[in-house]
Length: 298
Length: 156
Image (cartoon, rainbow over all chains, first blue to last red; front, side, top):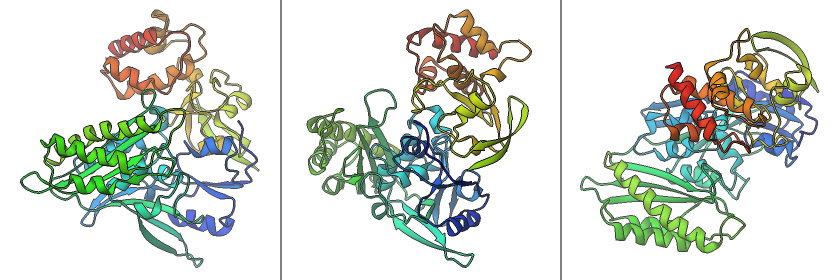
């Protein structure tokens, strides 16, 4: 496995330089490289053959987690190793920590980024279902052709499509993943199951809950990863979780049983359909319980 | 389709012209003759034998292009021992017979060196977790884990 010829490579220092590079190159056969942990594999196996690469590793504006009055903004080039240690996400958005800690291995976490994962939207990636469950908004930019930039925001749900497909236009760069200021009594969690430790997930389940002061669930989002259709929310199960409390094991189990039925699962070498349904149910219950605990400050 | 890059490798400055598509692993091995960095899985990014440090952090050099290291500092297995003096971790690998064929060892040493720099007092679980990205087909890992544990204790 060796890359095909690449004609040009630039490593811009600022976002404007990066956007302008697209302007100069044209979007066809130009790809951005974030951490490159998926893209390099695809380039080497020649699944993609970019003629030009725009390397985003030095664009400081795209890195780091910032909190402000309008919520939390995670730069697209924030690496897993940094996301894993990010305490600002604890509680409401801790599912992102859960995902980042177990992506690939140490070497991959030192390079791989949340934005790269979302833009690649691999079938067995962890960040796509987690972003769905957290109700994130994705901010994208492209050059306006006059030295400035056009930005737009998309809900994770509209951004993430089938595996390896997103709503990102070829000349757009994902800037940040935006989360609202964490509501009181909100918690989230994510777990995956794979064939070996930290393997790509056969199934991954992310659960987000908002509780009222008495600890009753008012709002829930459940998202499943590892699906041939791309990451999916389980709407019926979400509704079934509303009204549940952390101690309502039966209610939580019933909600996740619904999730396992309403989601279309595939059979492959790693797991048949029945086992995938079992994983959604079983893993999902554990994840939901952790999300409830975190929502209660546990 | 070539680019000039300037980088530091094991403390030495290099200015080289490289094809853009050249992987960092091949640059180190073929252009700088640093063949201690091994290719175990035909560049699939799964075996970890090609692990090196870029700016002090463990990365798989088959998953990076050499051009991406322009301006950066790379350390390979050849850069660990100074003046023939093994590091505590290298010595521990020797003491605990933590290698058999040795093909994976360079990558494991590079990964574990950075791991120990960040984790002074790791549990056995932490160590095993840290080795997920490095495949060893001879040892069964037990001696490797023992060696890393011992090195951690000696470095404290």
